[in-house]
Amino acid sequence: MKKRVVVQKYGGSSVKDADRIKAVAERICSYKNKNVNIAVVVSAMADTTDDLIELAGKIAQDPTDREMDLLLASGEQISSSLLAMAVRERGVESVALTGFQAGFLTDKAHGKARVQEIDGKRIKRAFKEGKVVIVAGFQGMTAEGEITTLGRGGSDLSAVALAKAINADVCEIYTDVTGIYTTDPRKVTDARKLKEITFDEMLEMASLGAQVMQPRSIEVAKRFNIPLHVRSSYSKEEGTMIVKSTQKIEDIAVRGVTSNKGEAKITICAVPDKPGVSAKIFNAVAKAGVNVDVIVQNVSHTKKTDISFTVPKTELVKGMAATRAIAQKLGAGDVLEDKNIARVSIVGSGMRSHQGIAAKMFDALAKASVNIEMIATSEISISCIIALDKADEAVKALHKAFALDKAK
Ligand code: ASP
Ligand code: MG
Image (cartoon, rainbow, N blue to C red; front, side, top):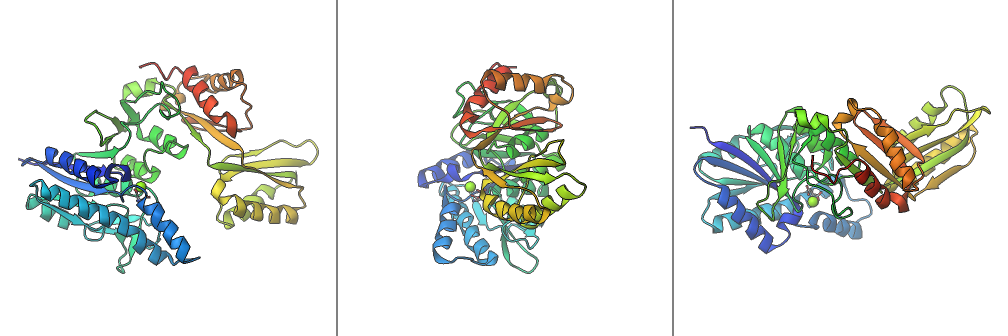
């Protein structure tokens, strides 16, 4: 009989101390029997990665990417080895592997490496020996033998990529919340846990501010159609399935509301309105390595127009410098910054086939006296840039307006 293959990923909060590591080990052992092979991917304990970054910052102004990766990869090696010990302590054979030992081959982009291939041989051998395999997440190795990391939150990606490589029947993502909610349950008390959500919706929610899973990992799951089960490591409760699509899902216009307070707005005043100007501005900003998001440019009646765009707050200084320089070259006016903005978004695959969703959103915001500064849409989302101090209120109003508190 073919054994079931399960990949389980435990996030940093699920293994934050010795007691939690023991609890996770209990859970793994309760799943393990003769008919199932389990590969576990684990994140670094709690805030280990942040702490290591801070520590490096105290020691060097500009550490090499290579040494940073070597340093950060150690966090997951600690948690994986401890977890393997805890599993073994409970009478189940287990082996901890670093990303490299588990066969994760990546490109050379330190700090944001891409997984190119996973050689599952060593894991399969361990399965044959009846062992639970515990893999250090977030890391791999280049063909030249350099240790790399996969970007923040990268253990999710490790888990999904591994699930693909070893043909897992299911990939479970264990976290400290019980699943994906219609909105952040810490902020809106009647947020509801979703039974299912599509890859596209989850991708959109994640990039618009929902912080449950790393977006890149969802892209990979989507590409290979690997269903994900997001659930809590603190309870046996069923979580949320992330899947390709279902009939029911398509019927629902709006599935969730998100907010993102991590962006800032740059405005260039009085930009000469002639061909090629926008290209010059955004080329200059891109060259500075700044990610631009929402862009608004008005029609001009005076041969000059204002252009506003948002950038991550962390890139505002770089963005302002690049924008000021190009504005001067183009003979534009002042360049202004605004850190006090937030983005609120509604997301749902059903938007493709429902009308009037945008109108309903703007209505709800108007009723809550929220002024809309910019608007951006995708096929399955609508975002508004609003004042930062209105963000939580706006989310509540939208959640209610689309009846997300009511079971569907
Ligand atoms: N420890 C890494 C981070 O905090 C990877 C992860 O948690 O998935 O970003
Ligand atoms: Mg983490």
